[in-house]
Length: 155
Image (cartoon, rainbow, N blue to C red; front, top):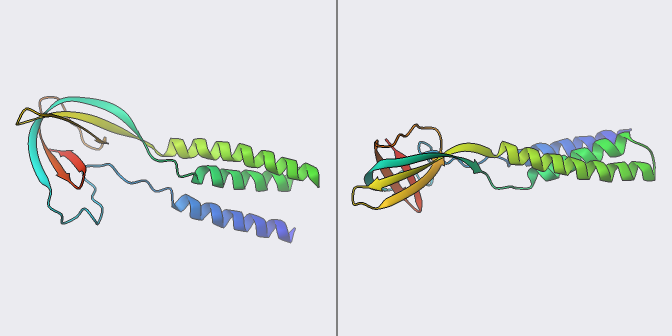
């Protein structure tokens, strides 16, 4: 019993620390990282040609799979059967938990985005994808801010 409590405690701490690593980087035009602040940006103006809703998928870190596998393996292995039955249940629980954890991580990491196509004042066309936290309409005049390979569309 003491071993079970200790194992569950270790699994819980491991899962909590893994979940802390799930934070995704924002693609919002309004959010800057500390490294982006106080850096000069190139500014261009243009008109929105089109706006298309998209889904932005974060990178799979494997955290969901690991946490789900650990929790599923411990839960199934400690509560089903004994001896080799317990081991088999633990393996099956780990596989199913890993699959469920991966699916959850995939779903949590998706967010709404916009693909904004802009005709610059010089006639060039640009398409920028960013979080859907501002509304853009065709015909609107916008600014494109670019620095270090990152371009944002703002009003």
